[in-house]
Image 1 (cartoon, rainbow, N blue to C red):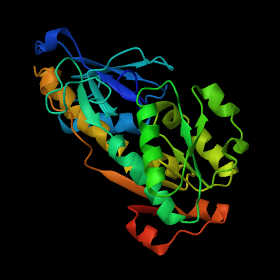
Image 2: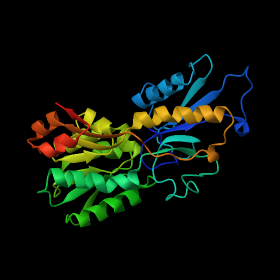
Image 3: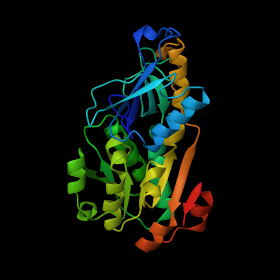
Image 4: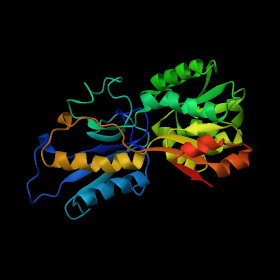
Length: 294
């Protein structure tokens, strides 16, 4: 799933809305919506959520709307019109403001700015004996440095000292990492990024092999064996993005649509993984989870 092109530094899938000057399409013409994705799976859950959102609005794929997938395969040089997973669009200079973005970019954020520190706080609360952490980072991706700095600030406030960077800028580099890349750390934080989301199973396998407690930015990591995940629900953002595509198809300019924050969040704890790693999750943490995987 993933969209991240120029737009957001963190997840991955971009929706490119249709045609000419945002004018309403003639009734006889079926609108086409291009979907630019960093991955290559049209059936990914976030895309199914987007299709569901369109169906709720009366769109039937192939009958009154056509979806065209274009897989970027790592190319981040294109700009979407509706992005379901933006990260820090104002801070990165992509839009003038959330309320009035202007230009041809709009969509929904994942609130990573606000959540990077919270993830580390949750990890430390769950495992208070951790004295040092490592962060998995994709250096060239937009927003990564800001997200890492936010994690460093949270670490200092928690008395954890410096955060060790573990870098991977491609799928090949990620798969070349070995568990000893995290040596010296007592826990791991994965910085939100489309590459890591696309290869989240590889990320989870690597961290679990290092036998370290970790927290991830999206629930899909925990669904596939990650210990804990806290963040916005990506599928829900994609479902809501269908409404924006609908409004653009009916003539609204993207720059007039405010960039919205997520409304659904997940805090998922995987108890099965905790047992396999020999870790104990405090009852208070389990009570606060939106879902516990047994």
